[in-house]
Image 1 (cartoon, each protein chain N blue to C red):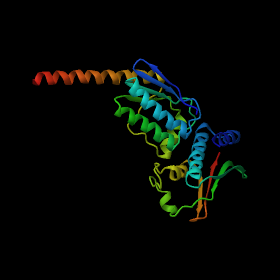
Image 2: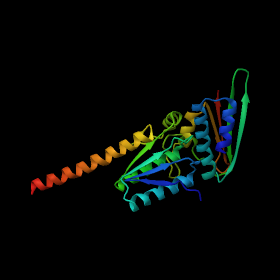
Image 3: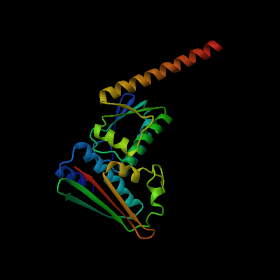
Image 4: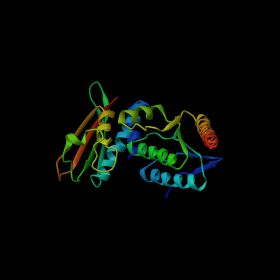
Length: 115
Length: 135
């Protein structure tokens, strides 16, 4: 998954730094899908608007969902034994971040980085 | 399972991470390294991550833990070759790697390790002398 994301980021023409940020985010959010969502899927999109282009990744799982989304986005908050940086850190690394989650109804996180 | 080779070079162990550093390999390295430190009485560990294209919070935690564990086993760890893009990314991510020693190149890392090992053994001699004086 990481190498697929890297390939797309390279194709779109992201700088080395932004490629690193995108792949790191993919790794963080991908781990969440595996650990908390019991697996799921990732979609990678190349988006083009009039004056800009970017890469969008959608992480979807059908896991237990997140009880308290606001709390989950705070640095250091963790439900397991991690550092609690995955969500809050990914938000900082990307330009747009959207989290939709309902208890018992899975979680969808959409992140976008613009070139 | 794929494992990262650990080379012995005098008192120092050399580790170059060139494979995709996924979670299981990272944990296996931590285990192998601590075993080797004890079995070979290593005084320093040099971890070269120049081939790594990214470090996420999990890998950051494992690298930090390797450094802390090494210290508990009377061994210093130095991380070398971090790419600038990774330094910026993990800082923004919030991974701090507090207390970890770093150097830009493997050569500088070896120098730093030798300095630390040397100043530590000097310190020991010094402590012994003090004890002797008090007696």
